[in-house]
Image (cartoon, rainbow, N blue to C red):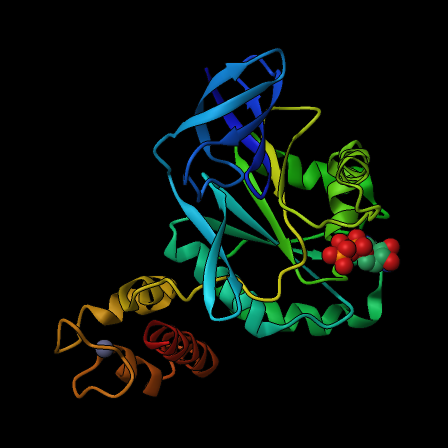
Length: 295
Ligand SMILES: Nc1nc2c(ncn2[C@@H]2O[C@H](COP(=O)(O)OP(=O)(O)OP(=O)(O)O)[C@@H](O)[C@H]2O)c(=O)[nH]1
Ligand SMILES: [Zn+2]
C-alpha cells in the first residue's frame, strides 16, 4: 500500500493512504530520516496500523537548522509560503535565508505580507520587501480580518500543490492556516491531547489538505532559521538567482565569489547590479556552512 506521511513523532508516523484512510505507522530496525510529505510504501497491520517498508523517491527535501546541524523536516514541497507581517518587524536575515533554502532546492517562494490592516508598519514592511519584489518573488498582501479576500488571493496559487508555510513567531502563520483550513486547530489540539502534552500550539510539522480544492499545506513550528548547513557552495550560490548570469563570467570554475580576481559576482556588486546586503547574506551563509562542515 502506498501513502503519504502526514505527521511524524520520533519513530511514529501518521500515513494517509491513497483512499484517504489514516494509519499509524512505525519503522522497523534503524530506518530513519522519513519526514512529513514523504511518499511511502507500507505493510498494513490490523485495521489501523502498519510498518513503513520504503520511502519513495523524493522531489526535494527541506531542512531546518538545529544547533550546528541541519535536520530534515519536509519533503516533496512544491512551493514555500513565507509569512511576514507589518508588525512586529520581521527579520530580513531569516527571510533571506528562507528564500535561499527554497531557491537552492528549486522551490518557488511566495511572500505573504500579513496584518495589512495595521497601517502603521505597512510602508516600512513594503520597503523591506522591495528587494525581493525586484528578484521576482510574488508578494501578496493580506489580513486575517479580510478572510474572503485572503482566500480569493491565495487559493488559486495553492491549487494542486504542496505548499510549506513558514514564518517567524508572531507573524500570524497559525491565524492564516485557520482561515484556509478551519479544522487545522482541532487537529493540532486533538493531537496534543493524544500525546498528552496539553499544548495547543504548533509543536510539530503536519500536512493538511485544503477543504475546498485539491492541494495541501504543511505547517511547521515558527522557525528560528531555515537549515542551510548541509548546502554546498554551489547550492548556496544557486540560492541567489541574481548571481547566476554574473557567475558565468567568473575566471575560476570553483570561484567562491568572495575574493577571487576576475569574479563576475564581485564585479556586479561593485557596479551595483547585486545588492550589498544580499552579497553579505551569501557570505554569512557560506562561512557558516564551511564552519559546520569542519565542526
Ligand atoms: N491585526 C492583525 N493581527 C493579526 C493578523 N494575523 C494574526 N494577527 C495576530 O497576531 C498574533 C500572532 O498570530 P499567530 O497566528 O498566533 O502567529 P504565529 O505566526 O502562528 O505565531 P506562533 O504561534 O508563535 O508561531 C495574534 O495575536 C493574532 O491575533 C492580522 O492579519 N491582523
Ligand atoms: Zn565569482
